[in-house]
Image (cartoon, rainbow, N blue to C red; front, side):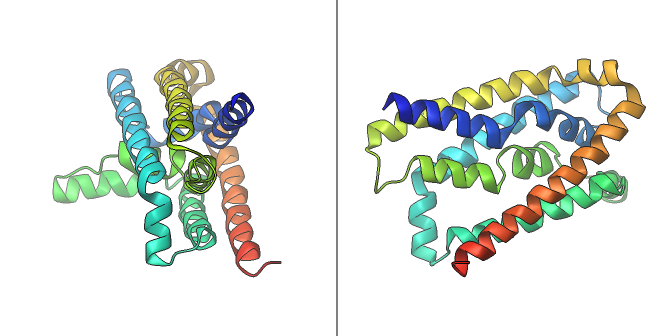
Length: 205
């Protein structure tokens, strides 16, 4: 059990990557003041927790019931990540969000998309929580403990994102722009890798 907890904690930390999410968070919340950024960070982490807990409880059953392979979910999630990464690289960011806000009077909530999904609770994280709480391998007590571990990593992520304005102040606009594009390239590579893993898994390559 202890080995499983340690393995799950390391896995969740790597796939969620709280530090690596900071530049993505700053890009998505560009133009927001510190108080608003912290509100968005808290809301995004709460939404991510709800999404991941829902997948722990119902994800495996739902996907099996609908006949959806995890490989298909990987490809779909990777495609979403790729689109987000291209916006970062091309400096599109969330310009469309602000345009739509002026045109319709309704501003899209960035805490839901893209911060909670797919930045924090992305396809890799969802796959990780489903695998680490596999109904066929682990008892409900073990799954409850692993859920607690996952929530602990999300708490760490919230604290990291809450401190994002300090990173912004230290790096400056130029530094954030550079890091955003670099992270966009890395995210694009991760997206392609996720899709390739799904395709190769489906075709048993």
